[in-house]
Image 1 (cartoon, protein in one colour):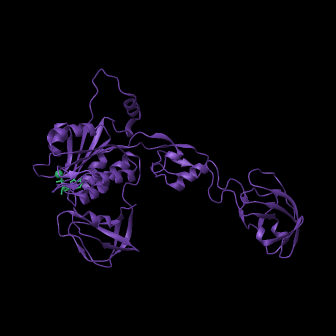
Image 2 (image 1 turned 135 degrees about the vertical axis):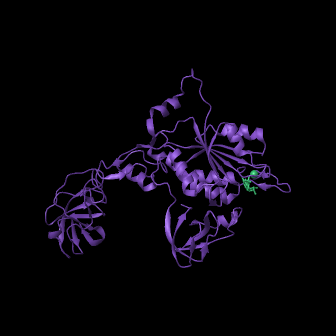
Image 3 (image 1 turned 30 degrees about the vertical axis):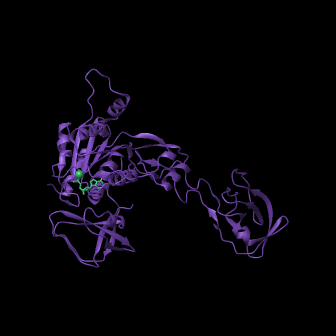
Length: 420
Ligand code: AMP
Ligand code: MG
């Protein structure tokens, strides 16, 4: 049994980033930038009005003053107008500032009288003017390599006229659930059977990470069908097998993985829940020496050092208990996927929280407590056992208790937000 830190280190040392790809902006949400991006345009790109109103020379305005309206400047075409003291130009939100104007008077603050206005307020220079580059300067970094593309980032890139960009590769994932007792939701349960829920869990978690689920199968605890299913599933970048990695006679996964040529790098980690976790790597079907590489292989090879050979499949064997599968996915599989996708930040978001109760870990494994973080307080919820799916469903955060660690109520602790 190795420590959680060792396991994570080993996994992340093995994982390589996938070759980058070009995507349109509209497809890039949740991907990671494969290079730095810099502003081509300042924001705002030119001085413009923040209001519908009148562009004026502030020093020639005062409450009660009359100004002559000389022209109109709508948004969309710069008429290159000029305004002089005693004059006003009718202007609209986003329209370029006329030369000579240094303030906008809101239309609500004037009384229109033919081709004149009466100003009903005092006016200060700069009022309701959006200055060129006050938000963003040309050349400023707008997106760092490895940063996730969020809605606002995508909008920012669009505001720069960028319609497509280079992002990290997409991870193809296979999910294989095992167990004779499991029945697909929607089908009839017999005595002793339970519904198979890990595929739903892992599919959802993979989706949240941005991985594509290319393969989803269930297999009985039977050698031959398991071997065939593993061989089908290992055509992907990662294969996640749920169940069958423990020590019972029906836990066949480890043996069969060895039979199909996998190198088991990790089996059993000092983590609770999740001890029987397994990590390995295997080659997908090797091309014969005379066969020419596929287009995909050529792409991968030419992408150089940062690429994982496409022919390699990383296999994660997760314990079948739902909470164990959940915790080991988040601590081991998620960071691996994010690294493959080119992300810089691999950890779950952490926030400080006030602990509601005393907690002690007397065991020999790091313990992940499921809890609810609400208004800055973390309270354990539900049964802290690896089968307790309802308890897990009530939680939104995890607290890691190290071996031998004791925490007191009211202490400030860091908790991981899993509902990120
Ligand atoms: P195993 O890791 O195969 O020994 O399974 C441990 C426990 O998790 C058993 O109680 C199984 O019934 C349960 N389990 C295994 N796989 C699943 C699954 N896909 N969905 C729900 N429960 C499961
Ligand atoms: Mg099983």
